Length: 107
Image (tube, rainbow, N blue to C red; front, top):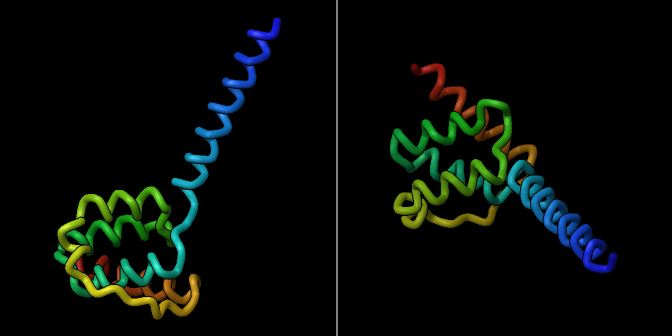
C-alpha cells in the first residue's frame, strides 16, 4: 500500500512539473524582452524581422516563441546592443506591434 501511495505522489509531482513548465512557455514575455525584439526588428535581418512579425500575429509574444527566436537567431542577437530602458509592458508591446504591422503592410 505504501509503495502505491509513493507512486501516486510521484505521478502527481511529474504532472505538476509538466504543467508549470507548459504555463511558463505560454506566458507572455516581459517589457525588457519586447525591447530586445524591437532592437532586433530594427537592426536584424529580413528573416529575423519576419520571425518577430509572425510571433506578434496574435498581439503578444509567448516565452516559448521568444526563446525559440533567441536560439535560432543567436548570432544576430549577440551583436545587438542591450538596452534596459523599457518603459512598460503595454507600451513595448504596442510599439513592436506597430512595427510588425508596417512590415506586413509592405508585403
